[in-house]
Amino acid sequence: STAAANALADYEYGSFTPSFGMTSGGHNITYHDQQGQYVKIGQLVQFQIYLRINTINANGSGILFIGGLPFNATSNTGQGPAYGGCSFGYCQSLGAMGSRSAPVGYVEANSDRIYLYSGLDGSGNHINMTVANNLASNNCQMRLTGTENVRIIGIPKNGSQSIMRIGKDNP
Image (cartoon, rainbow, N blue to C red):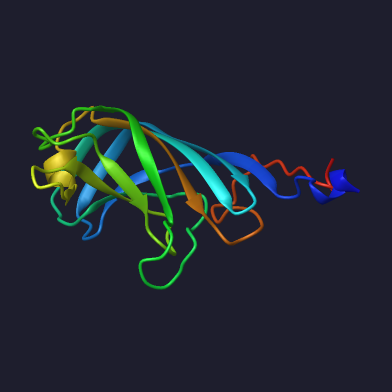
């Protein structure tokens, strides 16, 4: 039947704990708020993140990322289709943004990380964000939403307990 062929067989939702990180380490962050929620339908994951820093000590270097997504993004070779991306609904107390546009981020292939960029510079290029330059203020916060493509079926890698599956075997 048509209904059976179009049944939603892979749906789940849950929460996760995102966190800021740097590719070269060397930071210590405590959070006022650290929240993530997701919905997965088939190979598409939609996520929402809210991070608000309470205190920060940034002694390291490297590119700023948000880690801890519930699934690793898919992989491919070369510069193929997008692995995932996000848009920012609200940011507060970001340093070194100057006149650049709002931050942007992309989900790295084969990872649970969103790499962050401080919008566009005067030449139209994205600039890597760093903890030392962009999160140097206590009370810095970001609210964002995004999507990623995944190729796994099953429970999230972090073992989230708030999962619901709907399909022909679980009405």
